[in-house]
Structures are given as structure tokens and as C-alpha cells.
View 1 (cartoon, rainbow, N blue to C red):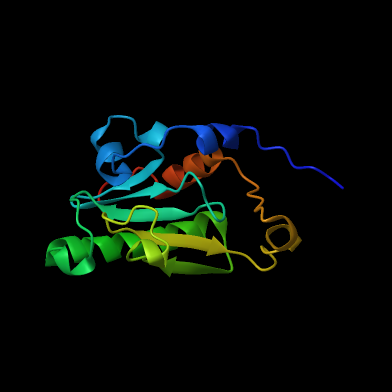
View 2: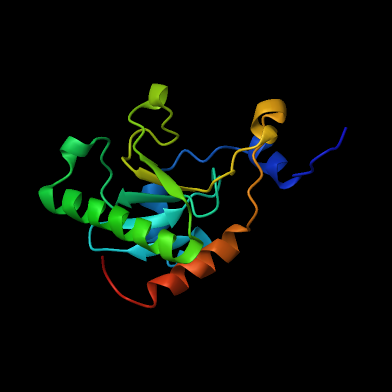
Length: 163
């Protein structure tokens, strides 16, 4: 039997869980690279998921702390989905996936890790990106470091500003 080592996970497993909202905290800091914030708009931003399903797993969230789509203003909603659209175009250009899973988990029972701040997941998918690992070992292999994916995506936007 082969063993996979991921010793950095133990810090997360045993560590104290931060009760603050990442979607409120991270954009308020002046450390976009450290926080993997890829794109900022006036009302929404995109950031890499630090526990991704696949390389390039982005999340788009409004700056304002709201739990559901119906609480977003028309301006927030429009910009949110424009940023989702632009993120898909960026990921297509830079990472060349075969397709995407795009979704919003509303509520804990639906799988929301942060249930009181709405956010949209954009997960790039490739032919053959599923294998035996999740089935027999409950593990997912992500083949690229977050910092490398981040650098590629920020460069892919080419310094453009806004959404």
C-alpha cells in the first residue's frame, strides 16, 4: 500500500477554527496575494479557494455580508455574475479546462462552508480529472500549488481593472 503525505493538513484539522467571515475579512486586508484575491470589482471580488476541488477553484463573493441572492442589490447581482462570467473566460484562457461546475450552496445542509455570506463556486473540470483516489481513499490530488495558480490567473487578467 502506498501512502500520501500531506502534513500541512494537520494544522487545519487540529487548529482552532476562525469564526470570522473570510469573505468579509480577506478583502479588507491589504494582502491580495497572500489571500489569493484574483480580481476586485466595486461590489464583488474573486478569490481562490484554499481547499480546492481542482486547480483554479475560484469563489466570487460580494463585499457586503449577505446570506442570500435576494438580499443583493441589482448592481451587486449584475456585477457578481459578470465577475463569474469573466472568471470562466479567464480560467478557460489560462487553464484550458474541458468544462466547469458553477454553483451556490445555500445553507449548511446544502454544503455551504460559509453559510451566512453568499458566494459562487467556479470549479474547472478536465476530462479524466476524477480517478480512484476519491473513491478508495477519500482523497483528492490537486496537481498545482495555489501560489502558482494565483500567479497565472492574475497575469491572465493582464492588469485590467474592474469587472
